[in-house]
Image (cartoon, rainbow, N blue to C red; front, side, top):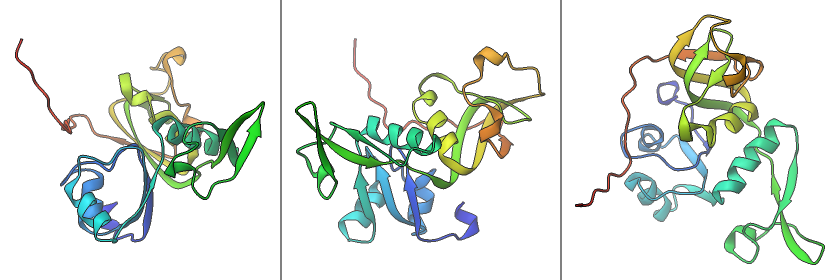
Length: 193
C-alpha cells in the first residue's frame, strides 16, 4: 500500500498500528487522511498528526466497529446500538427510542479494499484465522469490494476441512503467501512472580 503512493486514505482498523510497522508506515508517509478506530494509544506518529490537526479521527467502540464491518459486508447500510449513547461517539448521529431505551444509528462500512491476515488459506481464498485474529478479520474480509488475504500457510483446494473455514473464498480476491511473518508485539508487559 505504501509503495502505491495512494493518498487521502480512510482506514478502518481496531488500532492505529505501531511506529514503523503496518499502518505506522502509511502514517509516516502521510497517506492516511482519516482513521476509524477503537484504540489508538501505541503510535507516536498517529498522536503527533492528530494533535497537529493533520489527521481526522473517528473513535468507534470496538464491538460497534466490528459490527459496522459485518453490516457492510452483509449489505446492511445501518443499524441501531445503545453503545456510545450519551458520549462523544453519539454526537451528530441519529437517536431513536426503542422500548424506552435510546439508541444511535451507526453506518455499515463498505471498503474499497480490505486487507486481512489469515493463518491458513487455500488457493481459492478460503481462510482460517488463528485465535484472536477472528475478532475483526472475518468481518473485514466481507466488507471489502476487493479483499486481499495474507496467509502463513497456503494449501491446495480441498486440503482445508470445510468445517474449519472462517471466511469462504467467495469474499477473497487475492491470496498472498507469507510463510514466515515477523510477529510484532505492540506492548510487552511483564511482572515478577
